[in-house]
Amino acid sequence: MFIGEYKHNLDSKGRLAIPAKFRPQIKNGAVVTRGLDNCLFLYPKTAWLEIAKKLANLPISQSKARAFSRLMLGGAMEVDVDSQGRITLPEYLRKFSFLKKKAVVAGLYDRMEIWDEEKWNEYKTGAERESGAIAEALGELGV
Image 1: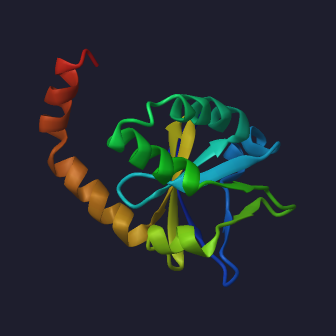
Image 2: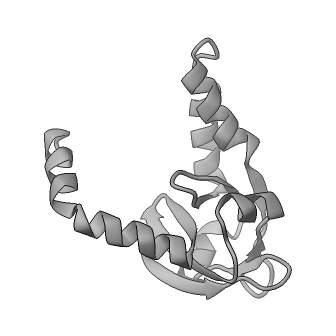
Image 3: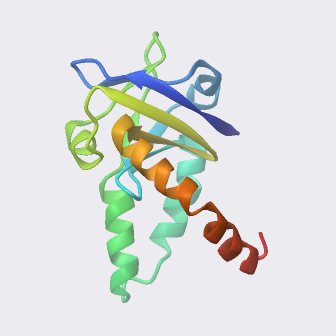
């Protein structure tokens, strides 16, 4: 399980250190892809295979299903953790997520989200401001 918020820097080659406590869960490989809200999603390979199967089974006759599959599957890249605990993020994903030097790695149970630090702070501030309304909406969903 991934939980917590960690700040790391990208180096000039686009490498990002993964928090040490998360590394064992991705030692056999991981997949990084475009996420939502201009962040990146990083899944352990086994979790990614489950997501990919669900996406592959979406009806291709529905435009939103095709668009979401393209976003997630078309943007995906397998990554390995190097001996220093880093992954290399492809340029197209860094551009998509506006990643510069400072990044935040947020653990979200079955995945990590990788954010540009400035974008993360903006998002988090907005979510905190709306936390009451968010909680109420989730209550309607049984959460």
